[in-house]
Image (cartoon, rainbow, N blue to C red; front, side, top):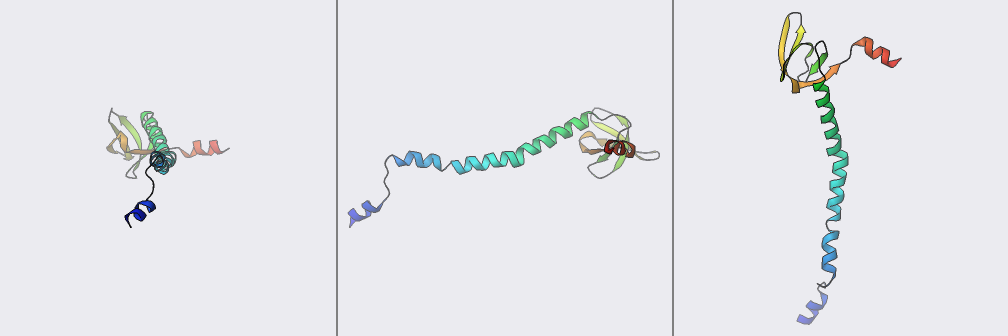
Length: 112
């Protein structure tokens, strides 16, 4: 009876080495898919945001990550002074700028 149990068990010969590598192929494919669908686009967005923040200048209209619209009136290495209403100014960290707003005249001329 013991001989039958050993006869039914899978062989431990040369197939063991190749079976180990083929088990990693789905993991490698999943990493490649995650890289192209998630990691790479996020890096691209991050690079564009850093470039946009470094190119800010006085007079630019911006939107902060909190949704406040304003115009840059002063700049420092780490902060921006943003005028959100007449004689109302707030200091905002550079990293909290989410977008630049294009004036209506520029966006209409680009469409033509």
